[in-house]
Image (cartoon, rainbow, N blue to C red; front, side, top):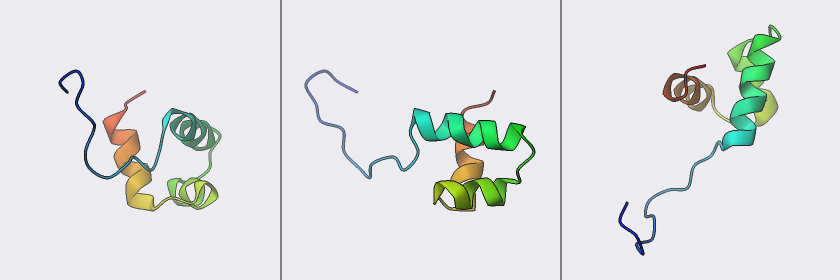
Length: 55
């Protein structure tokens, strides 16, 4: 993005803190579906966040 330009588009639903919590839950053996419900995000958002930010 160019300096001085505002970011356009829809804001991200999951930030770094939520991603860390999602990874911790999954590493602890919780299913992705249950972890997504806990964080109140959709299952597809959870899978997309995991795919976009590999461990």
